[in-house]
Amino acid sequence: MSNTPLMPMATAVWLVENTTLTFKQIANFCNLHEVEVQGIADGEVAKGIVGYNPINSGQLTREEIELSSKDENRALKINTYNIEISDSDNDKKIKRYVPLSKRQDKPDSALWLIRQHSILKDSQIARLVGITKNSVSAIRNKSYWNFNNLNPKDPVAMGLFSQKELVEAIEKAERRIKREKKEKEKIKSNT
Image 1 (cartoon, rainbow, N blue to C red):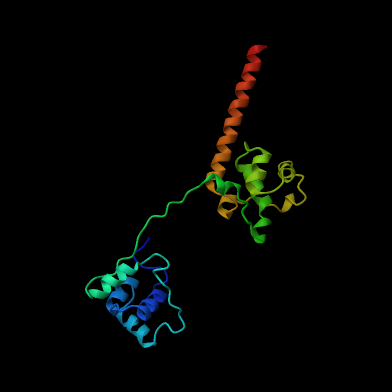
Image 2 (image 1 turned 30 degrees about the horizontal axis):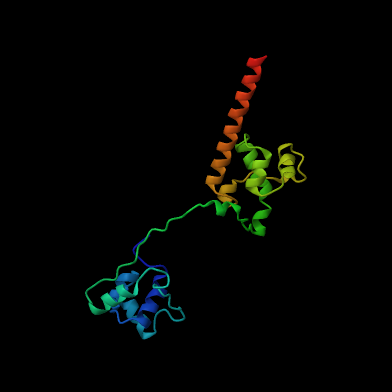
């Protein structure tokens, strides 16, 4: 995260209207010129811009504003924090909404997966992309009703599913292939 707040002009408007900070402190925090901040206070700059509360967004704390209000030479410090992104099992069970504009790209994505990762089973592709297994089989057999108009498109780039989900599916397919080879070798050695 950079050292400037989100929506700096709107943040400056809010700070001018709701705090006793100096123009210099607000300008330094919002990465604006001091004259711009004075223009905001005079109503000449940022007309019609609604103030953006940096406290609600977690970029500043009330304590930080109070400390800087008491000491004009103290600069405001943006609140930096790391957000931990968890990928729980519950997330996988939630059906994701796919916009109408992307639904027509599902067969294109299935074709891309068939060409790029041929080891994936039809059921895996259907689950990843969100189409029926019969549609995937038809695309693989080139008997899909609109096959001639399909253009392979990367489903991860289109946002249909994550790279992690694709890697997990490929690893599962590789384990299945290894298991099938071992079973074939056992059958050959027994005969």
